[in-house]
Length: 453
Ligand code: BES
Ligand code: MN
Ligand code: MN
Figure 1 (tube, rainbow, N blue to C red):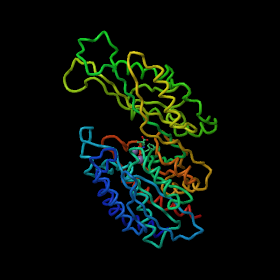
Figure 2: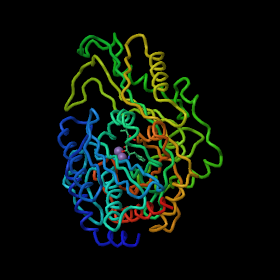
Figure 3: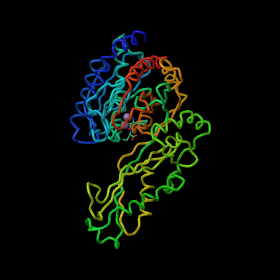
Figure 4: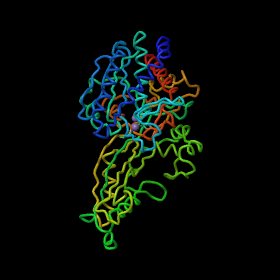
């Protein structure tokens, strides 16, 4: 292990330059205009895997953007096999969103790497790859590893869910390891043991056959207004979701677990840094961390209708649309929740308009047992660079395939991430602290050794 850590210390600059090169490829998965870039980002990853000594490296088709696979299985049959998952695709990014530097021309400024994907997830995937590079360059890894880096996480991983069912043997392992989450602060690491599930859908409210001159206003129900009336009814005044049956399957959380989770609750200062002086909002009876982790939510992610461009148009739009998502917790089923929301919307749609609701994507919620030896090993590994012991936390975001790794491959999933709250994942000026990159790599070197024990 000493040799591997000496290798990481001696190769910081090489590691950084490699990450910058990968970040310059705009692998935006949701937009077909970037299809070739996704392919290039996958090839780049495969080349990097080959150069660092992984074997059986291949860019494999999934029906969508390809996955990159590579393994090293020479630690011995008595050693565990770790399936490392991550994603090379990124969220869209354009200067107009408020970037101060082009999102795909990575730069290092004040100790941070700025680029789309810096923290979510190329920077963290590189932590996983460079830790393994250091081990392979200094005598081999203490565990067997299989790397699976996909290109559609940011658009729902629907193809990967199928890829897994078609490759159960190839992906067979003892644990799944993922770096795609964050820490509480630079001095407070987190071990994430729960992620929320997700179901996304599109609601279209339609009225007249065509857009109309709004001079006719007063005799028909404007679809944009009807949409707002429907949406307004989907929450109760106490912040809870007003969909019949929505909470029925929610697994109760013990007082003990709630107390543990609240150790990573947001402080007033965290809140103000991110939200300014806005008062908080949410489901009554739960703390902020509980609202974003152990409680399901319903959110409006986009609204369109009428004319919202430059200037003004006195028009009644023929349709209005909303993108709606629900974050889910154990034991909610995304398909069942979709049916419940659909039924509720149909029930509350006024007779003066029509609603159509279409299912978009689904991902199940996931929880990993905190007493698993692989989780304990992670706590140990964090100690190499951090004095504050890692807290066990559940996060509000989703990684749709995590539940599939559990269900289809029966794997416990360990989530060790190194992003910080100011990293702006999905936002403008996304960044990754160089210090966290370096510490992340070392921590994973140590973790692979801990796992071998
Ligand atoms: N890395 C995130 C997931 C995440 C975010 C985990 C915050 C923990 C904390 C991932 O890349 C992501 O953004 N997932 C999407 C999935 C969706 C597009 C299907 C999400 O959660 O919205
Ligand atoms: Mn991610
Ligand atoms: Mn993301």
